[in-house]
Image (cartoon, rainbow, N blue to C red; front, top):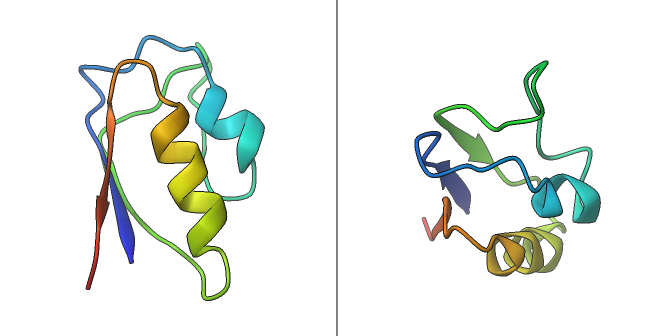
Length: 64
């Protein structure tokens, strides 16, 4: 499983980071930048919650 980040949609609410700070990295201004994040084994549920928490829908789950 991976997470695609659409940096253009991110508004800096950081709800993803609040739920999974070890999975998401914010820039100096508190925004997510364009990225594809590999979800560690065992963290699929945490990743799914973080994606659903994004009000801008800047995150998308990719099932491998």
